[in-house]
Length: 517
Ligand code: NCD
Image (cartoon, rainbow, N blue to C red; front, top):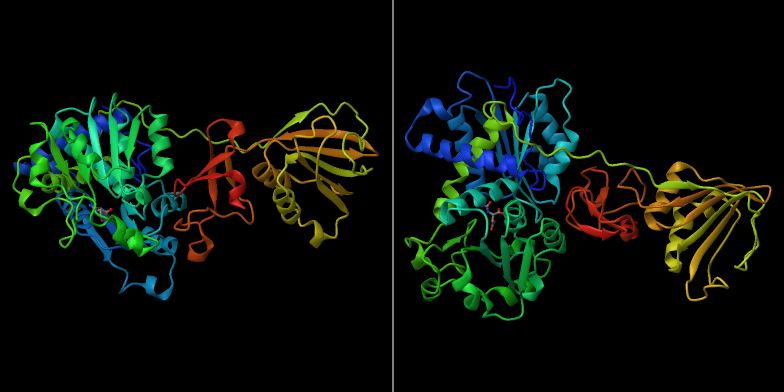
C-alpha cells in the first residue's frame, strides 16, 4: 500500500485530464461509497472524521443539486462546508476579482474549493493561480464554468449511465435540446469517449449545435458524433436504437439573442408515447432542473422505471464524496494506474536555417533591400496580416524606417506574400513570438552589411502566452479584458504544426492563431 494516494492534490476542473484507469477506479469507489451511505456504514465513508478539513463552496450562479450534493457529501465525509450561494452579500459586489476571493479562502487554509462561475474557464484559472508553497494542496472542483464544462456532473452522469445500461461501451447515446450552451453535454461524452464503440446522436435546433471543439475532442478519441439539426422528427425516429437519452434544459440565461430561445423552445418534449418506442433497457436522463413551464420530459413520466433524473441527481453525493476523498488523500491508496500527466508544452517558435552568406537582394520582388536590419519574408498574403505585424512591432511609434508590401514573386505570381524590411533593427525573441503566432511560416532574416547573417523559419509555438494585445475570441472567456479578472491569455496549438489552430487553455475555444490579435 502506498503512503500517499496518487490522487492527492488532484483538481477536478476538466474532463480531458481524466484517464480511463482513474475513471474506472473512481466508479468502483463511488459505488462502494453509495452502498456505505445507503447502509449507514459510517466508518466506510466518514473518512475525514479525525481531521480538521474544510470545503469552501463558492457559488456565483444559482444551484440546487450541485451546491447541496457537494455540501452533503462534504458533511458525510467529515469536512466542514463554508461559503456562499450567490454573491449578493459578499465583496464580489464591491468589485473583488475571482482570484482575490479565492486567495482569501486559501489564506484561511481551506482544503477544497468548489466553484460555480458564469465565465468560461473560471475553475481552470483558479488552479493555475493556486500553487501553494506549503505543500498542502487546495483542490479545486468545477461545479460548472459558464457554458464550458461541468466535469463533476459528467462523472455522476457516467456513473448513472453505467447503472442504467450495465456497461460503458458499445452504447448509442442521444443528447437533445441544448448541446450548445448546456455545459453538462460537453463533459460526460468526453468521459464516455474513453471506452470503445460509443456513438452520440445529437438533436438540436440549427442555432444550438454542439460546439466544434467538443466534436473535435470526441473525434480525437475516435468517437463518432452524428448531428440532427434539420429534421425535427429525427429524435422520434432514432429512439428505438438508443440505450440512453440525455435531455437538457434550454439555457436561456446564456443565449445571446432571445429570439434563439423562442425558436427552439417548443422543439423537444419527451412524451409517454415516445417512451413506448424505446428498448426495455433504455433510460432517459437529465441534469436538471427542468423548466416547469416548458418541460423537456413530460411530468407524467416521473415515476417511470426508465426515468433516471432523480437517481442521477442522487448519485451526486457518493460521486462528489469520492472526488473529495481522493483529492484530499483520504482514499485511493491502492490505485496504481496512470494519472494524466500533462506534457510540458514547448514555447519554441523558430528554427535556424543556414543563411548561406546570401546577399540580400531585391531579387524576385521589387523592393529595395536593406543594408543593415531585418527582412521578414513569406508572410501570409493577406494585407491585414502585414499591417497587424507593423502595429505589433510598433514600427511607427518607434520611428523605425521600414518598407512593407504584398508582392507577387516573379516565379510564382499566384502565390502572393507579405514582405517587410526594417532598417537598423534586429528583432527580439518576443517580436519573433508575435510574428510566429500571427504569421506562422514566415522567415526572419538578419541583415548585416547587405548579407543575410541569420535566417529563421517561424512556426506556431505549442503554447502561446505572455503576448501583449492578445484576446480569446470567446466573449464569455475569463481572460477577456472586459471582465477585469486579470487572467492572462494562454492558448495551446492543436493538431499539426502547419494548421495554425489554437485552443484557449481556459475555455477550450478553437481559433485560428491570428484571431488572437
Ligand atoms: C446544470 C448546470 O447548472 O449546468 N445543472 C446541474 O448542475 N445539475 C444544468 C442546467 O442548469 O440546466
